[in-house]
Image (tube, rainbow, N blue to C red; front, side):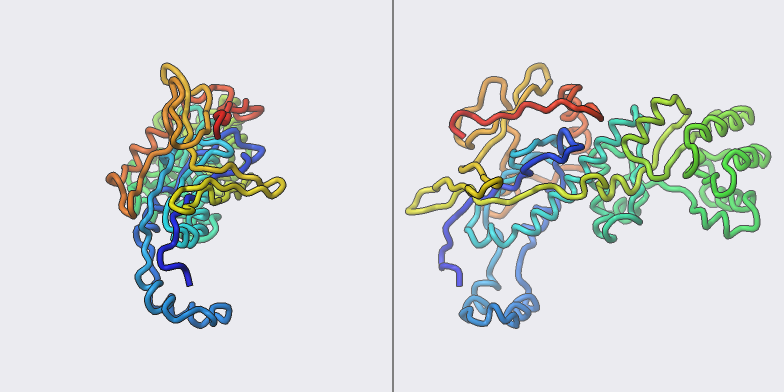
Amino acid sequence: MPPATPPPASFELFVRELPESRSFLVAAGLEQALDYLESWAFTPSDISYLRSIPGLSGVASDFFDTYLPALRFTGDVWAVPEGCPVFAGEPILRVTAPVAEAQLVETTLLATVLFQTSVASKAARVVGASDARPVIEFGGRRAHGPEAAVHAARAAYLAGCEGTSNVEAGSRFGIPVSGTMAHSWVMAHSDERSAFTRYMEVHGPKSVLLIDTYDAVASARLIVRSGLRPAAVRVDSGDLAGLSMAVRRVLDAGALEDTRILVSGDLDEYGVAKLVASGAPIDGFGVGTAISTSVDAPSLSGVYKLVAIERNGNMVPVAKLSPGKQTLPGEKQVWRIGRDGDAERDLIGLAGEPAPPHGVPVLSRVVRHGVRTSPRPSLQGLRADSRAARSALPTGVRRLRGADRFPAARSTIA
Protein backbone atom coordinates (compact mmCIF):
# COMPACT_ATOMS: atom_id res chain seq x y z
CA MET A 1 0.00 0.00 0.00
CA PRO A 2 1.30 3.51 -0.81
CA PRO A 3 2.39 5.62 2.15
CA ALA A 4 -0.27 7.71 3.87
CA THR A 5 1.35 10.86 2.48
CA PRO A 6 3.31 10.01 -0.67
CA PRO A 7 6.16 12.48 -1.26
CA PRO A 8 5.81 14.94 -4.12
CA ALA A 9 7.81 14.14 -7.22
CA SER A 10 8.37 15.67 -10.65
CA PHE A 11 8.30 13.75 -13.91
CA GLU A 12 9.10 15.15 -17.36
CA LEU A 13 7.78 13.89 -20.69
CA PHE A 14 10.17 14.39 -23.60
CA VAL A 15 11.47 12.78 -26.78
CA ARG A 16 15.01 11.43 -26.58
CA GLU A 17 15.88 11.80 -30.28
CA LEU A 18 14.09 13.21 -33.29
CA PRO A 19 13.19 10.72 -36.02
CA GLU A 20 15.63 10.85 -38.93
CA SER A 21 13.03 12.50 -41.15
CA ARG A 22 12.09 15.24 -38.66
CA SER A 23 13.95 18.45 -37.92
CA PHE A 24 11.38 19.51 -35.31
CA LEU A 25 8.22 18.21 -33.68
CA VAL A 26 4.90 19.98 -33.15
CA ALA A 27 3.60 19.45 -29.63
CA ALA A 28 -0.01 18.26 -29.54
CA GLY A 29 -2.45 16.36 -27.36
CA LEU A 30 -2.15 18.52 -24.24
CA GLU A 31 -5.86 19.32 -24.03
CA GLN A 32 -6.81 15.64 -24.10
CA ALA A 33 -4.11 14.91 -21.52
CA LEU A 34 -5.55 17.57 -19.21
CA ASP A 35 -9.07 16.26 -19.75
CA TYR A 36 -7.82 12.87 -18.62
CA LEU A 37 -6.18 14.26 -15.48
CA GLU A 38 -9.30 16.24 -14.57
CA SER A 39 -11.54 13.18 -14.77
CA TRP A 40 -9.05 10.61 -13.48
CA ALA A 41 -10.65 8.30 -10.92
CA PHE A 42 -11.02 4.61 -10.15
CA THR A 43 -14.60 3.42 -10.54
CA PRO A 44 -16.10 0.61 -8.43
CA SER A 45 -15.75 -1.74 -11.42
CA ASP A 46 -12.09 -0.73 -11.84
CA ILE A 47 -11.43 -1.50 -8.20
CA SER A 48 -13.30 -4.78 -8.36
CA TYR A 49 -11.15 -5.88 -11.26
CA LEU A 50 -7.93 -4.87 -9.52
CA ARG A 51 -8.94 -6.94 -6.48
CA SER A 52 -9.16 -9.98 -8.77
CA ILE A 53 -5.60 -9.72 -10.10
CA PRO A 54 -3.45 -12.44 -8.50
CA GLY A 55 -0.42 -10.18 -8.33
CA LEU A 56 -2.33 -7.81 -6.05
CA SER A 57 -3.67 -10.49 -3.71
CA GLY A 58 -1.25 -9.49 -0.97
CA VAL A 59 -2.24 -5.82 -0.96
CA ALA A 60 -4.02 -4.62 2.18
CA SER A 61 -7.77 -4.12 1.88
CA ASP A 62 -7.47 -0.41 2.76
CA PHE A 63 -5.81 0.13 -0.61
CA PHE A 64 -9.02 -0.98 -2.36
CA ASP A 65 -11.54 0.25 0.20
CA THR A 66 -10.11 3.67 1.06
CA TYR A 67 -7.14 4.75 -1.03
CA LEU A 68 -8.29 4.04 -4.60
CA PRO A 69 -11.88 5.37 -4.26
CA ALA A 70 -10.54 8.73 -3.06
CA LEU A 71 -7.64 8.99 -5.47
CA ARG A 72 -7.70 12.03 -7.77
CA PHE A 73 -5.03 14.06 -9.54
CA THR A 74 -4.02 16.89 -7.19
CA GLY A 75 -0.74 18.00 -8.74
CA ASP A 76 0.65 20.70 -10.99
CA VAL A 77 1.38 20.48 -14.70
CA TRP A 78 3.75 22.66 -16.70
CA ALA A 79 3.63 22.31 -20.47
CA VAL A 80 4.54 23.86 -23.80
CA PRO A 81 1.57 25.23 -25.76
CA GLU A 82 -0.01 22.90 -28.25
CA GLY A 83 1.34 23.62 -31.71
CA CYS A 84 4.70 24.80 -30.41
CA PRO A 85 7.79 23.40 -32.18
CA VAL A 86 9.88 21.27 -29.81
CA PHE A 87 13.18 19.45 -30.10
CA ALA A 88 14.96 16.43 -28.67
CA GLY A 89 15.51 16.44 -24.91
CA GLU A 90 13.12 19.31 -24.25
CA PRO A 91 10.28 18.67 -21.78
CA ILE A 92 6.90 18.80 -23.48
CA LEU A 93 5.22 18.64 -20.11
CA ARG A 94 6.20 18.28 -16.46
CA VAL A 95 4.02 16.73 -13.76
CA THR A 96 4.62 17.53 -10.09
CA ALA A 97 2.35 15.55 -7.78
CA PRO A 98 2.38 12.98 -5.01
CA VAL A 99 4.55 10.28 -6.49
CA ALA A 100 1.81 7.65 -6.75
CA GLU A 101 -0.42 10.01 -8.73
CA ALA A 102 2.40 11.03 -11.03
CA GLN A 103 3.38 7.40 -11.67
CA LEU A 104 -0.10 6.07 -12.33
CA VAL A 105 -0.88 8.57 -15.11
CA GLU A 106 2.33 7.86 -17.04
CA THR A 107 1.07 5.52 -19.76
CA THR A 108 -1.96 7.57 -20.72
CA LEU A 109 -0.01 10.83 -20.82
CA LEU A 110 2.64 9.27 -23.05
CA ALA A 111 0.11 7.69 -25.41
CA THR A 112 -2.00 10.84 -25.65
CA VAL A 113 0.76 13.38 -26.17
CA LEU A 114 3.12 11.33 -28.32
CA PHE A 115 0.45 10.12 -30.76
CA GLN A 116 -0.94 13.56 -31.48
CA THR A 117 2.56 15.05 -31.56
CA SER A 118 3.67 12.51 -34.17
CA VAL A 119 0.62 13.26 -36.35
CA ALA A 120 0.89 17.04 -35.96
CA SER A 121 4.58 16.89 -36.84
CA LYS A 122 3.85 14.96 -40.05
CA ALA A 123 0.95 17.22 -40.97
CA ALA A 124 3.15 20.29 -40.54
CA ARG A 125 5.56 18.87 -43.11
CA VAL A 126 2.78 18.16 -45.60
CA VAL A 127 1.26 21.60 -45.14
CA GLY A 128 4.69 23.18 -45.50
CA ALA A 129 5.17 21.40 -48.82
CA SER A 130 1.82 22.51 -50.27
CA ASP A 131 2.85 26.07 -51.16
CA ALA A 132 -0.17 27.52 -49.30
CA ARG A 133 -2.63 25.27 -51.13
CA PRO A 134 -5.17 23.71 -48.76
CA VAL A 135 -4.55 20.23 -47.39
CA ILE A 136 -7.49 18.17 -46.12
CA GLU A 137 -6.87 15.29 -43.71
CA PHE A 138 -8.36 12.15 -45.29
CA GLY A 139 -6.91 9.41 -43.08
CA GLY A 140 -9.80 8.12 -40.97
CA ARG A 141 -10.03 4.73 -42.64
CA ARG A 142 -6.30 4.08 -42.27
CA ALA A 143 -5.95 5.24 -38.67
CA HIS A 144 -5.43 2.75 -35.86
CA GLY A 145 -9.06 2.72 -34.80
CA PRO A 146 -11.94 5.23 -34.81
CA GLU A 147 -10.77 7.14 -31.71
CA ALA A 148 -7.25 7.45 -33.11
CA ALA A 149 -8.78 8.78 -36.32
CA VAL A 150 -10.62 11.53 -34.44
CA HIS A 151 -7.52 12.67 -32.58
CA ALA A 152 -5.36 12.40 -35.70
CA ALA A 153 -7.78 14.77 -37.43
CA ARG A 154 -7.49 17.19 -34.52
CA ALA A 155 -3.69 17.09 -34.56
CA ALA A 156 -3.60 17.56 -38.32
CA TYR A 157 -5.89 20.59 -38.14
CA LEU A 158 -3.79 22.05 -35.32
CA ALA A 159 -0.73 21.74 -37.55
CA GLY A 160 -2.30 23.53 -40.50
CA CYS A 161 -4.62 21.23 -42.44
CA GLU A 162 -7.69 23.15 -43.58
CA GLY A 163 -10.18 20.47 -42.62
CA THR A 164 -10.93 16.79 -42.28
CA SER A 165 -13.16 14.16 -43.81
CA ASN A 166 -13.88 12.86 -40.28
CA VAL A 167 -17.33 14.12 -39.31
CA GLU A 168 -16.95 13.00 -35.68
CA ALA A 169 -13.82 15.16 -35.38
CA GLY A 170 -15.74 18.05 -36.88
CA SER A 171 -18.50 17.58 -34.34
CA ARG A 172 -16.18 17.33 -31.31
CA PHE A 173 -13.64 19.98 -32.15
CA GLY A 174 -15.29 22.39 -34.59
CA ILE A 175 -12.96 21.38 -37.43
CA PRO A 176 -14.29 22.18 -40.92
CA VAL A 177 -15.39 18.98 -42.64
CA SER A 178 -14.83 18.30 -46.29
CA GLY A 179 -15.15 15.32 -48.57
CA THR A 180 -16.36 13.98 -51.88
CA MET A 181 -18.37 11.09 -53.19
CA ALA A 182 -16.98 7.56 -53.04
CA HIS A 183 -16.04 5.54 -56.08
CA SER A 184 -18.80 3.17 -54.99
CA TRP A 185 -21.33 6.00 -55.45
CA VAL A 186 -20.35 6.28 -59.09
CA MET A 187 -20.24 2.52 -59.61
CA ALA A 188 -23.65 2.05 -57.98
CA HIS A 189 -25.26 4.11 -60.75
CA SER A 190 -25.82 2.89 -64.28
CA ASP A 191 -23.72 5.75 -65.66
CA GLU A 192 -21.50 8.60 -64.44
CA ARG A 193 -23.90 11.32 -65.54
CA SER A 194 -26.62 9.97 -63.25
CA ALA A 195 -24.13 9.66 -60.39
CA PHE A 196 -22.92 13.24 -60.81
CA THR A 197 -26.38 14.73 -61.37
CA ARG A 198 -27.95 13.05 -58.35
CA TYR A 199 -25.01 14.00 -56.15
CA MET A 200 -25.32 17.65 -57.15
CA GLU A 201 -29.05 17.57 -56.51
CA VAL A 202 -28.18 17.00 -52.86
CA HIS A 203 -24.99 19.03 -52.43
CA GLY A 204 -25.62 21.81 -54.93
CA PRO A 205 -22.93 24.20 -56.17
CA LYS A 206 -20.51 23.17 -53.37
CA SER A 207 -20.26 19.65 -54.79
CA VAL A 208 -16.88 18.01 -55.36
CA LEU A 209 -17.16 15.31 -58.01
CA LEU A 210 -14.81 12.33 -58.05
CA ILE A 211 -13.87 11.85 -61.68
CA ASP A 212 -11.29 9.03 -61.88
CA THR A 213 -13.51 5.98 -61.36
CA TYR A 214 -13.22 5.18 -65.08
CA ASP A 215 -11.46 7.94 -67.05
CA ALA A 216 -10.77 11.33 -65.47
CA VAL A 217 -10.51 13.32 -68.70
CA ALA A 218 -13.63 11.72 -70.19
CA SER A 219 -15.47 12.48 -66.94
CA ALA A 220 -14.42 16.13 -67.16
CA ARG A 221 -15.82 16.29 -70.68
CA LEU A 222 -19.04 14.68 -69.44
CA ILE A 223 -19.39 17.33 -66.74
CA VAL A 224 -19.02 20.09 -69.34
CA ARG A 225 -21.52 18.48 -71.75
CA SER A 226 -24.03 17.94 -68.98
CA GLY A 227 -24.01 21.60 -67.95
CA LEU A 228 -22.90 20.75 -64.41
CA ARG A 229 -20.97 23.35 -62.44
CA PRO A 230 -19.36 21.69 -59.43
CA ALA A 231 -17.17 23.62 -57.03
CA ALA A 232 -14.36 21.15 -57.64
CA VAL A 233 -13.40 17.82 -59.10
CA ARG A 234 -11.08 15.28 -57.49
CA VAL A 235 -8.58 12.93 -59.09
CA ASP A 236 -7.50 10.06 -56.83
CA SER A 237 -5.21 7.95 -59.00
CA GLY A 238 -2.86 7.86 -61.96
CA ASP A 239 -0.49 10.57 -63.15
CA LEU A 240 -1.89 13.35 -60.97
CA ALA A 241 0.20 16.09 -62.58
CA GLY A 242 -0.59 15.07 -66.14
CA LEU A 243 -4.26 14.40 -65.47
CA SER A 244 -4.73 17.69 -63.68
CA MET A 245 -3.32 19.54 -66.68
CA ALA A 246 -5.59 17.67 -69.10
CA VAL A 247 -8.64 18.13 -66.89
CA ARG A 248 -7.88 21.84 -66.46
CA ARG A 249 -7.83 22.30 -70.23
CA VAL A 250 -11.22 20.59 -70.58
CA LEU A 251 -12.81 22.59 -67.78
CA ASP A 252 -11.45 25.91 -68.99
CA ALA A 253 -12.63 25.21 -72.52
CA GLY A 254 -16.08 24.50 -71.10
CA ALA A 255 -16.23 27.81 -69.20
CA LEU A 256 -15.60 26.10 -65.87
CA GLU A 257 -12.56 28.17 -64.96
CA ASP A 258 -13.79 28.47 -61.37
CA THR A 259 -14.05 24.71 -60.83
CA ARG A 260 -11.05 23.70 -58.74
CA ILE A 261 -9.00 20.55 -59.11
CA LEU A 262 -8.20 18.54 -55.99
CA VAL A 263 -5.99 15.47 -55.91
CA SER A 264 -5.44 12.61 -53.49
CA GLY A 265 -4.06 9.08 -53.49
CA ASP A 266 -1.23 7.93 -51.21
CA LEU A 267 0.30 11.40 -51.03
CA ASP A 268 2.87 12.55 -48.48
CA GLU A 269 4.97 15.70 -48.18
CA TYR A 270 7.37 14.54 -50.89
CA GLY A 271 4.56 13.74 -53.33
CA VAL A 272 2.90 17.07 -52.60
CA ALA A 273 6.17 18.95 -53.08
CA LYS A 274 6.81 17.17 -56.39
CA LEU A 275 3.36 18.11 -57.68
CA VAL A 276 3.81 21.73 -56.63
CA ALA A 277 7.22 21.87 -58.33
CA SER A 278 5.74 20.43 -61.53
CA GLY A 279 3.52 23.48 -61.97
CA ALA A 280 0.44 21.27 -62.18
CA PRO A 281 -2.82 23.26 -61.86
CA ILE A 282 -3.77 21.63 -58.58
CA ASP A 283 -5.77 23.68 -56.10
CA GLY A 284 -5.66 21.42 -53.06
CA PHE A 285 -4.63 18.05 -51.67
CA GLY A 286 -6.31 15.27 -49.73
CA VAL A 287 -3.75 13.40 -47.64
CA GLY A 288 -4.72 10.39 -45.57
CA THR A 289 -2.49 7.52 -44.53
CA ALA A 290 0.74 9.51 -44.41
CA ILE A 291 -0.72 11.93 -41.87
CA SER A 292 -3.05 9.83 -39.74
CA THR A 293 -0.42 7.13 -39.17
CA SER A 294 2.67 9.38 -39.40
CA VAL A 295 3.76 6.62 -41.73
CA ASP A 296 7.54 7.20 -41.80
CA ALA A 297 7.82 7.86 -38.06
CA PRO A 298 4.83 6.10 -36.46
CA SER A 299 6.25 6.26 -32.96
CA LEU A 300 8.48 8.68 -31.10
CA SER A 301 11.21 7.85 -28.61
CA GLY A 302 9.18 9.55 -25.94
CA VAL A 303 9.71 8.90 -22.24
CA TYR A 304 8.32 10.08 -18.90
CA LYS A 305 11.08 10.19 -16.35
CA LEU A 306 11.44 11.09 -12.68
CA VAL A 307 13.62 14.20 -12.37
CA ALA A 308 13.09 15.25 -8.73
CA ILE A 309 11.54 13.89 -5.53
CA GLU A 310 11.09 15.23 -2.02
CA ARG A 311 13.45 13.81 0.58
CA ASN A 312 13.61 15.15 4.13
CA GLY A 313 11.54 18.15 3.14
CA ASN A 314 13.60 19.16 0.11
CA MET A 315 13.09 18.48 -3.60
CA VAL A 316 16.17 16.51 -4.65
CA PRO A 317 17.18 16.23 -8.33
CA VAL A 318 17.52 12.64 -9.56
CA ALA A 319 18.72 11.13 -12.83
CA LYS A 320 18.83 7.81 -14.63
CA LEU A 321 22.36 6.68 -15.53
CA SER A 322 21.64 3.63 -17.71
CA PRO A 323 23.97 3.54 -20.75
CA GLY A 324 22.30 5.20 -23.71
CA LYS A 325 19.31 6.22 -21.59
CA GLN A 326 20.74 8.81 -19.25
CA THR A 327 18.49 11.64 -18.12
CA LEU A 328 19.18 15.16 -16.84
CA PRO A 329 18.30 15.73 -13.19
CA GLY A 330 16.07 18.50 -11.90
CA GLU A 331 12.94 20.34 -13.04
CA LYS A 332 13.69 22.11 -16.29
CA GLN A 333 12.59 25.07 -18.35
CA VAL A 334 13.24 25.76 -22.03
CA TRP A 335 13.91 29.29 -23.23
CA ARG A 336 13.48 30.15 -26.90
CA ILE A 337 16.00 32.83 -27.73
CA GLY A 338 15.75 35.21 -30.65
CA ARG A 339 15.11 38.76 -31.84
CA ASP A 340 12.49 40.50 -33.94
CA GLY A 341 10.14 37.54 -33.82
CA ASP A 342 12.67 35.02 -35.10
CA ALA A 343 13.76 31.97 -33.11
CA GLU A 344 17.53 31.49 -33.14
CA ARG A 345 18.22 28.81 -30.53
CA ASP A 346 16.89 27.07 -27.43
CA LEU A 347 18.45 26.88 -23.98
CA ILE A 348 17.48 24.04 -21.64
CA GLY A 349 18.05 25.02 -18.02
CA LEU A 350 16.76 24.43 -14.52
CA ALA A 351 13.32 25.86 -13.88
CA GLY A 352 14.56 28.21 -11.18
CA GLU A 353 17.50 29.78 -12.96
CA PRO A 354 17.30 33.28 -14.49
CA ALA A 355 16.10 33.64 -18.05
CA PRO A 356 18.84 34.33 -20.60
CA PRO A 357 18.84 37.61 -22.56
CA HIS A 358 16.15 37.63 -25.26
CA GLY A 359 14.87 34.28 -23.94
CA VAL A 360 11.14 33.50 -23.67
CA PRO A 361 10.11 30.56 -21.44
CA VAL A 362 8.38 27.83 -23.41
CA LEU A 363 6.76 25.90 -20.56
CA SER A 364 4.04 27.49 -18.42
CA ARG A 365 1.90 26.18 -15.59
CA VAL A 366 -1.41 24.89 -16.96
CA VAL A 367 -2.66 22.98 -13.88
CA ARG A 368 -2.31 23.99 -10.21
CA HIS A 369 -3.44 21.58 -7.47
CA GLY A 370 -5.40 19.54 -10.02
CA VAL A 371 -7.28 22.51 -11.51
CA ARG A 372 -6.61 24.23 -14.83
CA THR A 373 -5.10 27.66 -14.46
CA SER A 374 -6.89 29.19 -17.46
CA PRO A 375 -9.88 28.52 -19.74
CA ARG A 376 -9.52 25.97 -22.51
CA PRO A 377 -7.90 27.65 -25.54
CA SER A 378 -9.65 27.54 -28.88
CA LEU A 379 -8.30 25.07 -31.40
CA GLN A 380 -8.41 27.77 -34.06
CA GLY A 381 -6.27 30.05 -31.89
CA LEU A 382 -3.77 27.28 -31.20
CA ARG A 383 -3.60 26.61 -34.93
CA ALA A 384 -2.79 30.23 -35.72
CA ASP A 385 -0.18 30.36 -32.97
CA SER A 386 1.40 27.15 -34.26
CA ARG A 387 1.71 28.55 -37.76
CA ALA A 388 3.41 31.67 -36.40
CA ALA A 389 5.77 29.67 -34.17
CA ARG A 390 6.84 27.42 -37.03
CA SER A 391 7.34 30.42 -39.31
CA ALA A 392 9.69 31.89 -36.71
CA LEU A 393 12.09 28.95 -37.08
CA PRO A 394 15.04 29.42 -39.44
CA THR A 395 14.22 28.54 -43.03
CA GLY A 396 16.90 25.86 -43.07
CA VAL A 397 15.29 24.07 -40.14
CA ARG A 398 11.96 23.98 -41.99
CA ARG A 399 13.49 22.56 -45.16
CA LEU A 400 11.90 19.30 -46.33
CA ARG A 401 15.17 17.54 -47.16
CA GLY A 402 18.57 18.05 -45.60
CA ALA A 403 17.19 20.33 -42.92
CA ASP A 404 19.51 22.16 -40.55
CA ARG A 405 19.59 21.21 -36.87
CA PHE A 406 18.07 23.86 -34.62
CA PRO A 407 20.59 24.83 -31.92
CA ALA A 408 19.44 23.61 -28.51
CA ALA A 409 21.98 23.61 -25.69
CA ARG A 410 21.99 23.09 -21.93
CA SER A 411 22.67 25.93 -19.56
CA THR A 412 25.86 25.73 -17.51
CA ILE A 413 23.99 24.52 -14.42
CA ALA A 414 21.49 22.13 -16.04
